[in-house]
Length: 61
Image (tube, rainbow, N blue to C red):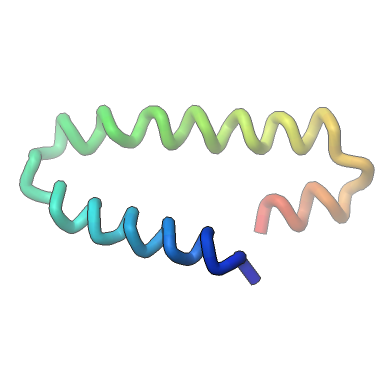
């Protein structure tokens, strides 16, 4: 289970996203790119540093 801090941040992000919905598809796409980059960096680090497949599968979930 995520920590209380992570849960709080996810809720804040959801509220922010609702407020930003009217900014149009181009702005939404621009906001999506950094999220994709962070996700790739996370998974890349897990693959490089994961001690076994179980760790990688847990990260994927």
